[in-house]
Image (tube, rainbow, N blue to C red):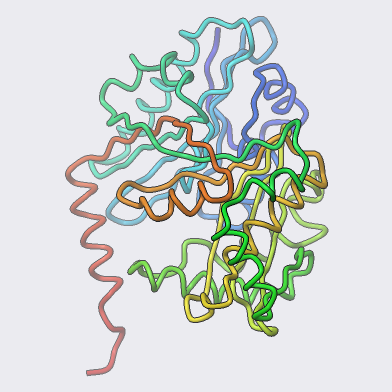
Length: 345
C-alpha cells in the first residue's frame, strides 16, 4: 500500500468519485466539484487529497483544505465544520483510515508550532475506526438534527407541526414574506448583506465566505457546472427586502442545510419559519429522504427547540480538533489586530 498527498488538480474527478461510490459516501462536501469551488474561490489555500492505493486502485482518501497566515497554520478535513472523514472503500481494512489520518497529522505538525487541525465526521461510527490516530485530538460529540421525509407526504408532515409553528407560517405570508429559489449571481449582494448582519449579530469579525465564493457558487459555467444539482440557494424576502438566505447541498437522498443568514430587523415577518417550511417543501417535491438541519452549538437550546418544531430528530456525530497553545495565542493576536482601526487618529 502506498499513501501520497496530491493537490486536487492532480486527481481525475472520475477516479475520486469512483472511490466515493465504493465507500458509500453520503457527504456532498466530498464531491470533487465542491472541492474545486473552494480551490477557485480561495486560490491561496491548498485543497488536497491524501490517497491510499492498493493493487492499482484507491482503498481510501482524505480530502483536506490547508491555509497559512504569517503566524499560524490550519488544516481542516474539511473547512467550516462540514462532515467528511476518511472515505474508506467498503471491505477495506479500517487500519487504512487510521494510517491516512496519521499521515495527514505528521505532514502538518512539522510545518510550524502554531497549528490547528480539525475533522468533522458524518456520524459516530467513523470515529471508532480512527480513534487510535486521534489520540492527541479533542474528540467531541456534536449535536445535529434532521427531518425524516421517507414514507411521508408534505401534507402529513405539515399537519404534524405544532399550532405555534403553523401560526407563524401563516404570519409570514400575511406579513409579506415570499420565498424564491435563487439561480442568478445578481443576488450575491443581498447574500453578502445578510451574511454580514448575521456575523455582526453574533459578534464575529469579517465575513466567513467571500464574494468570489458566492459568485462562483451561482456561476452556471463555474466549478459546479459538472454537478448542477449539488447546491441549492434559497432566499426569503419581506416586501422585497432580503430577509433570509440559505445554501443547501443535495446528495444521496439528503438535503443538507449549510450556510444561513438573516436580518433580525425583519424577524416579525417570520422569515425563518418560511425558509424552513419552504425548504422542506422543496425536499418533498424532489423526493429527498431527509433534510439535515445542521449542527447546533452548545448552549443553544432555543435553536434546538426551533428545529425540533419542524420535526427535526436529533442525532450525533463526532468532531475532532487539536490546536497548540501557540496557535491559540497567535489566533487571538490576529483577531485583536483585525479589530484595530485602520489609520486615522
